[in-house]
Image (cartoon, rainbow, N blue to C red; front, side, top):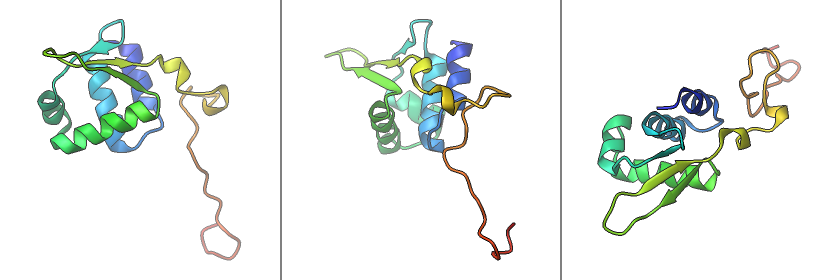
Length: 114
């Protein structure tokens, strides 16, 4: 397990389900950011169905957080991409280093919310 990788996974701008799978993978990962948990292991760890885990893995790959190498007759290797590529300097909050929220909410005048 890499604490640096886990910390980055917690800060990633993802849906809750995507983040949970990424955190689980980061927990399994070695210093080379590689791991090879089975789908049933991820299902148990994340309390998700097979289809749910598969959907989140596809999303993580599409977002650039994860690479996957299928190996015939062997386990699949998951490689978490370099966390430094996940955020741009504008994404990082200057005080605590975590990413800025994706969107901001500004109440309209007269809405009773501001």
